Image (cartoon, rainbow, N blue to C red):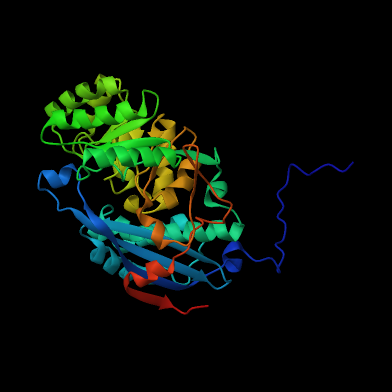
Length: 398
């Protein structure tokens, strides 16, 4: 048997016909950015409306990005804004879109960084990152489609379904009798949990509404409440104490979204879990929340933090620190991410977005199931196209 020489150096010659990964990679050739307004038939109110900080929600602005490559692959993603900011996000998205032309769509982290620095003078959170989200999400959709896998499977799923709760039936503008009807409909339709909005000027009204819903559901059915940053620390302490006997799954945003210390104090003081994070707009802000031990449940929103790339960073840190996950809104995206989280998560159900997509999601026995459709598994409907207010294309359609 011939031995390998170990006291001299030698170098193999590269095959002249071998191409590098960069040379053989696909390239982005066409991008379409669209502004779509989703109208809401009934104006929606939470605690921020009662205090006069915001007006009732009447529509949601969506920014869609469609990406196609030289080799015929495509992906779609979206971001959104409630009440204000949609035109600004759309304008910034159009500014940065050309930076993707000619790039390899597989280099998603690199492209996220490139887009982030394209608008860095505007900061690295807020509108800047939210305008990146449609592109980043579209690139992940494209990558999973190219692999022929649902995104959850591409990421490495821990489960094929995620326990799912409903929010849209329990807003403050909804009379209690209708809330109770909505709760019953949700439960009969297979929902796994119910979340109510709280934050009335009179805490007794909140306690009454929560008590009536708990009575209807029974003691074992998961029930959450959401104060939408309504209280100061003193009022939040009183409210958390008042809700302790209802065995809630969590109390959401009892304080200002950036009061990490205050949320941590509540999490340590009460048995009921504290949830927050939906208003944060970067992975860095979520890192501050997690490292400050400011919540039991983290609630990142992929469109708000800049897309799936930063969301994965948040997931990694959250799992390392043992935080539970309950992503905010956009279940069409978050189902895949929650399925890939190692700790059992929750998914928020919002039927509002349903008319914009051709595909329906599968809810059964309290859980939302990942379909076998590749990528994110959705495509724009004719209704979404009818709601489109503007669009712009970049590059050449393959």
